[in-house]
Amino acid sequence: MANYGPADLTIEYDNAAGTLVDITAHVLSLNDVDVENITEEVRPFGASWDKHLPIGVGRMPVIELGGVFDDTAATGPDALFAGRVPETPATTTRSLKFTWGGSKTTTVETHLLTYRRTVDKNGLTRWLARLQPTGTVTEA
Image (cartoon, rainbow, N blue to C red; front, side):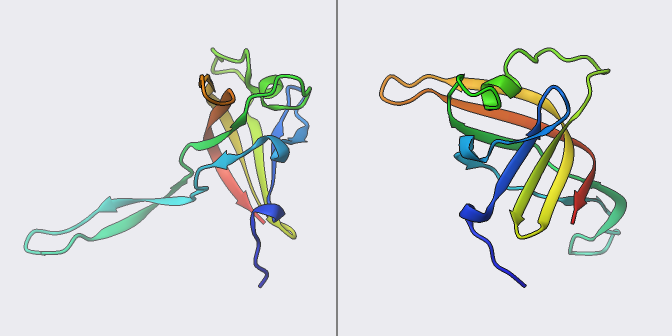
């Protein structure tokens, strides 16, 4: 088993043409990448501890990526996220792929929830994208 650190991580996201683009150099923050089982509480009367059973459905919570705002790169966050809200139900999903190091990957289709630009009078303008994973999470 290999171990990986932040220098080993690669983050890719689909552009409008459906091609994965390496956005790693633009990302300074990333929330946890969770894969979860949905469970149902099944504690019977008379029991003093919770009991849960998985229902056979998984999910991945919202992914948040962020960094320093830069609108000059044709493949940067502003080019990928700006001007996309609102989207219709027919809007094609976009792939998000993490390569943790070596060949270990996590890939999921996403919809854009939020693209935020935050101004700070004492610092650099920052961006944040919130992506809603949808469908199967593929881990290889």
